[in-house]
Length: 64
Image (cartoon, rainbow, N blue to C red):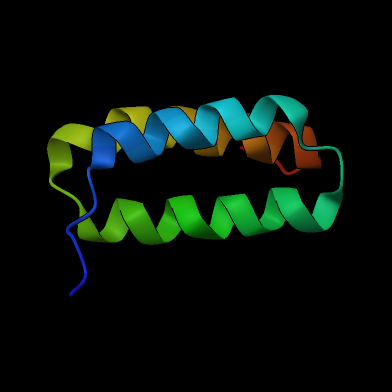
């Protein structure tokens, strides 16, 4: 049986992973995960997800 995702914990884990990510493919994968999470979580977590997505977009050279 799958356990529900703890959005706060998940966002913290992604923030830690972002510090060591160097490859573009992995950055894009993290961005995809965050965008999916953003769509399914309570809006109270949107600000944190947006901040991480913006950091990844900046690392990738995307316009924000």
